[in-house]
Amino acid sequence: MATALITGSARGIGAAIAIRLAQDGYDIALNDVSEKMFEDNDIIEKIQKLNVKCEKFIADVSKHSDCETMVKGVKESFGSIDVLVNNAGITRDGLMVRMSEDNYDMVIAVNQKSVFNMTKLVGAVMMRQKSGRIINLSSVAGLYGNPGQMNYSASKAAIIGMTKTTAKELGSRGITCNAVAPGFIQTPMTDMLSEEQKKMMISMIAMKRYGQVEEIAGVVSFLASKDSSYVTGQTIEISGGLSM
Image (cartoon, rainbow, N blue to C red; front, top):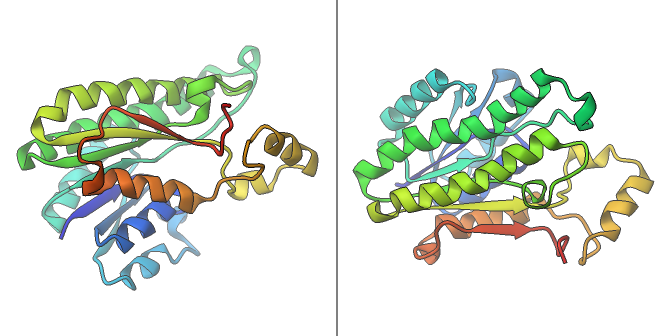
């Protein structure tokens, strides 16, 4: 049985990706930064009902030592790591001139350095296997920028460059690396916006609606599948036509 490891997967987009890959037949290694993220959360039970193996691994993926321990644990428990989804991410928004150095550094560490940590460590596993799929979560903020999100935009733009470099370095070993760049996706965060803010955001989208987490998971499923075997180094925007 093939195994997928998804960082930041206790809830939101990460959880939706985990469920979709479980439906595709993958055993699932879940990850998040603390046990608290899994409280009042039935993600493990949902996945186990799909007749695949599922375990959670608590690790701060911005820390290389945590990632080393987790990757070793996943390898020992599951035997292989066939798909890595670098999904973990945070926001600490604020206008550039008011943004604290701590908030800048924190977002870069969690969103960007985690991709380096996990890709380096899991990439070594995949190189020995001579196969693997690495899928990175970028954002439309990384493609076009976004006021009040210099730290987030920088981290997500960097992920696109890291994706291309990884694809070039690991392609000869049978490993693909691609990114997806979600736009405005309906999450608890967007639910807190005012009606005026929601209308303004939707007016910018060609399809005139928010995306759903399952729509992100569907594209990740394709990139993890045999159907994408000759696709690498790409960034797929999933935004309902936001950029047009």
